[in-house]
Image (cartoon, rainbow, N blue to C red; front, side):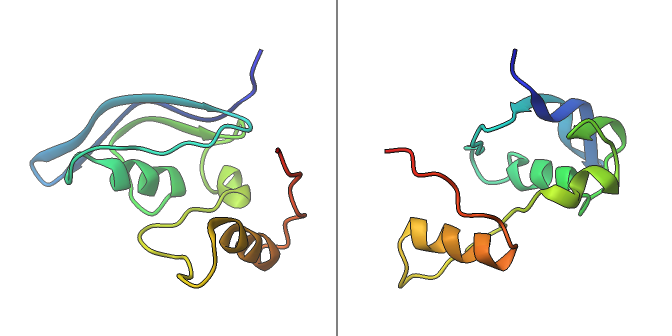
Length: 110
């Protein structure tokens, strides 16, 4: 059985009269790498902002590591937009941010 790290259950979010998130359900297990793909305005950034607590939502439940609210958000990070250095490759960028957040170097999977 996989350990659920992030869970969204029936999350709804509107900007004035425009409903952006309509009953979003999502489960991300520990160790998974996850991204969203979709057209502009589909709600991708809004989903991540609600997970991070940067945007409120009207209803539903968001759980991170078994906790709701700010307590669960202490162990997550997220980049919105371009937050990497062009002169470094992907691994070097990840190592930079790991060092910045005092995260031990992950094992190489090759």
